[in-house]
Amino acid sequence: MATILLDAYDSFTFNLYQYLRLAGGSDVQVYRNDKITLEEVIALNPRNIVLSPGPGHPREDPGICYEVLKHFEGKIPILGICLGQQMMCEHYGGTVGYAGEIQHGKTGVITHDEQGVYRGIEQQFPVTRYHSLAADPSSIPECLEVNSWTPNGIVMGVRHKTFAIEGVQYHPESILSENGLAMFRNFLALQGGTWEENPGCRSPEDMANHYPGLQTSEDGNVMPTPSAAASAASNAGDILSRIFAKRQRDVAAQKAVPGRSMAALQKQLGLGMAPSQIDFAERLRQSPGMAVLAEVKRASPSKGDISADAVAAEHALGYAQAGAAAISVLTEPTWFKGTLDDMRDVRRVIDSIPNRPAVLRKDFVFERYQIAEARLAGADTVLLIVKMLSAAQLRNLLDYSRLLGMEPLVEVNTAEEMRGALDVGAKVIGVNNRNLRTFDVDISNTADLAAEGIPSDVIIIALSGILKPEDAGIYRNTPVSAVLVGEGLMRAADKQAFVSTLQATKKD
Image (cartoon, rainbow, N blue to C red; front, top):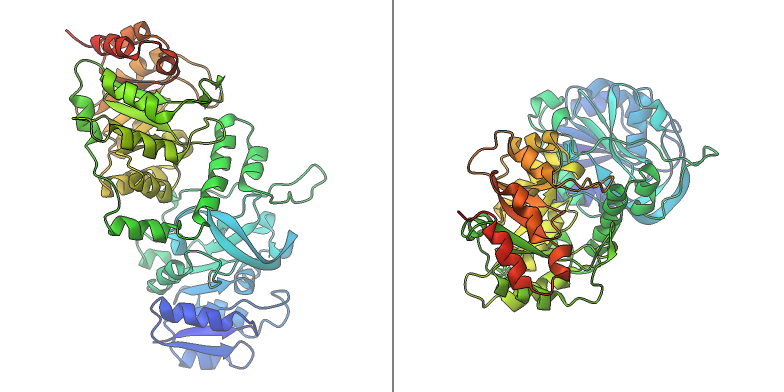
C-alpha cells in the first residue's frame, strides 16, 4: 500500500517526496491533484495521503483534494502541508484569510500540544514559513483543534478531533525546519483513519499546551512577531510569564547555533561526554541534620543585584567546604545574571572534593533540550516548576531527567501543585515560599504543605525566604528535611557558621 502525495504544483513537492521516503515511506507515489480522479485514487488503495503545499487560496484550483478529504476521512490517515492544511480547515467549515503578516522563507519558533504528529517533538523549535494566509482562529469549527501556533497566536496547524487528519501551515520538509523527519515518521506510523485506532496519539487530557488565541493590538490588527518573549509578555504581565517567554526565545536561539541542536546534544550524550554524576536524593539524605542547598545567585527579579560580580566557582567552593549537600546554580541570564558556564565552573571546582555536593541547574526548564544541556554541563539534577508546566510536560520532563540518571527537584507553591507533583511520582519536592507571580513570601508555606500526608520516601525542601539561619527553625518539627538558601548565603560573611547553624536545625 502506497503513500499518495497529491501535488498542488509546488516547488517543495520534491523535497516532500524525499522526506517521506527518508522517514520510512517505502512506496511514495506523486500525482498532480487535478490530473487524477477520486476513483483512480481509490483504486490505488492508499495507505495514507499527503496534500502538498501550493500557491494561491485553498478554494482556487483545489483539484480533487476536497473530494479526497470527504471520501477518505475516517478510513486512512491524511496529512496536509501549508495549502493542504488550509484545505482541511476550509473543508470542515473554517475560513482561511490574511495572516496579518507575510512570511516568505522566514524561520520562527512554534509552540504545539505534543499530540498527533508532534508526539515526542521538542517545544519551541524553528520552522520555515512561506505564506501570507492562515486559518482564522475565530472560525475554527468544533470538530477541529489548533495543534500549533506562533508566539503571537497565528495558527500553524489544525487537527481533526476524531479522524486521523492533521495539517501544518509551515514547511517541515524545508532544510531550515527542525524535526521534520520525526514528524513525518509520526504520521507514517498512524494506522486506520481515526485517533481511536491509534492509542496514545491524541489524548486531550495529556495536551501539553492549549491554543491561547491570536494576539491583536487595540486597533484589531495582528500583533507582529518580533520575538516569543515580547508576544508572551503582552499576553501576561506577571514576571513568571515574562521570564518564561524570554527563556523560550533564548533556547530557540541556542538550538539554532551549529552543533548545538538537540540532535547534536544527543550525539554527545551517546559519546559519553557527560561528566560522572551522583545521586541527588541520596546526597541530601546523607547530610547531618538539615540538608543545605546553597545557591549561587547574582541577582533576582525581586531584589535586583545581590552580588553582580560574583565568581560562581569561588562561592561554590566556599559552600562545599562549609558542608552544603548541594549547590544550586542559577543559569538564567537576564533576571538572575547566571549562565550555563557558571554551572560548568562550579562542577569543575568541586569535582575533586570527597563526597562532593550535588549540582542543581536552577532555571526555567520547559523542554528536554535544557535537561540534556544540563547533563552535559555537569548537573546532577534540574529544577522543574509545576506552575509553568502542564501535567503531560511535567511527566515527560521528569521521565527524561531520570533517563539521564537525574532525579529532578520538582517545585510547587500550592496544595494543588503538590498533588500534581505527587501524582507524577516526584521524589524530591521543593516548596517555594515565594509566589512567583506576586513575589509575596511566607516561610510557613513549606511547613503547611509538608503536613498534608506526604509519603515518607519523598524529600521535602523549603525554597526561598530563608535569609538567616534562625528562619529555618520553623521547620524543626516538620517533615521538611532540607532548605535552599540563596541571598542569605551570598551575603554571609561566615558561610561555614551559616551552614552549620542551618544543619543543626534538625539535629536531636
